[in-house]
Length: 481
View 1 (cartoon, rainbow, N blue to C red):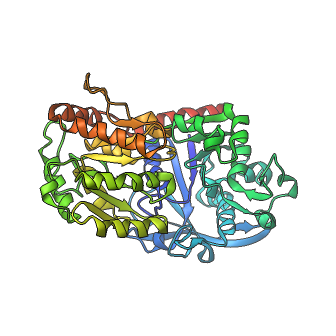
View 2: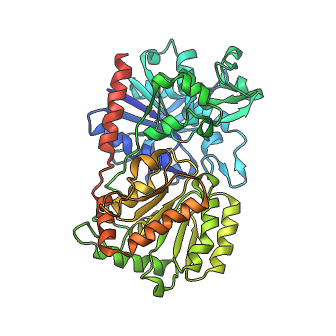
View 3: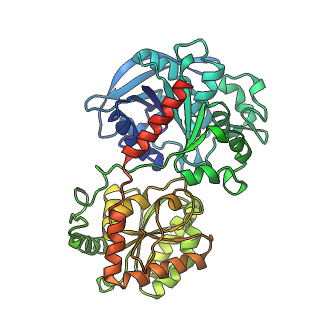
């Protein structure tokens, strides 16, 4: 089985969100099952200037923008066992960010990613790698199934099958219809049955229509996106393809996320010896200048994009009550400017109780998972979510909204039986959120019960191996179909 991943980000090379974690881990889990995997992504500025040196694998290859040929080079890590290949064309990718700046998306994102998708045949030719399945991720790679059906039928790729994974349906790759000719497709595809969406070009819709199969990153989300509430206008298209739509939950790379072996935390611990957890809590409080007299209170952690999707309007509504009750909170993340400003004000208002860092900081993220008592994820919607899975492993009890992957992966606590792994609320409201927090705080006061809940979570196995097996089954189904 040969599989080509086409994706716009991956750790350890470039990251804006959970997609990068998936592309960094899933290929290795598949290779462990005997799958031959290559990963294709753009050679952004941060990739070329990153810690992993690159070398040129091929030069003077040809992609296209519209019908115009454009040359590019193919780079690969100079050392190490990385199955990654990077498309280098500086006018499109030599930039400090992946998709845009805090002021907005780059004006030429359609051109950038249409060109990126167009390079697949030349890359496969240069590598001598002809995949059975091309696994495309999100709108940035969604043109690949369209091109395979309408431009590449006379290439060596014509027998390949395509799988499009939707990591977040809210991001669809919407562009003015005037840009449609830059895709190099016939205008007959700019229809309601093709890439047209309310008189705009919708790249993700094109992938959904023409891919052989579609998947999402949890079973719950695969069902939710077929409804008006979560479908973002594409629910009808997705319902029409329901038989080809699958939900496979994301996994965790436990080589990276395991409190018994985590190099980023000062005190390692395990379910058999939780003493390090308490010491990490003190280190975390010190890192955020919190009042150590609050150490006996439960400490809440949040690591997130600071965005409406992640429920920050609910966080804003419950924060004054948490502060009034001396319940400390630490928040790490970047995102919408309004939340940057709001958090800067709140941190000044509640010194010693609220700690905020507006940044992407991997080491600090590990310390929050290891030092917090509870993890808050009140998401409006959540395709899968990874931090609740990290939290379970670290004995940091999640308090989450029962949506998408959160509902799939966090089992409700039954305080009488001592079962379950977290506290869930269904209604999207501050009242429901604070009620779940209060239930968690009450359970925290019962040390024996709390340790049981922690250990329930730490015993869960959300490793990539199970998810990789599901993907392999789907690949085999596509290949034989």
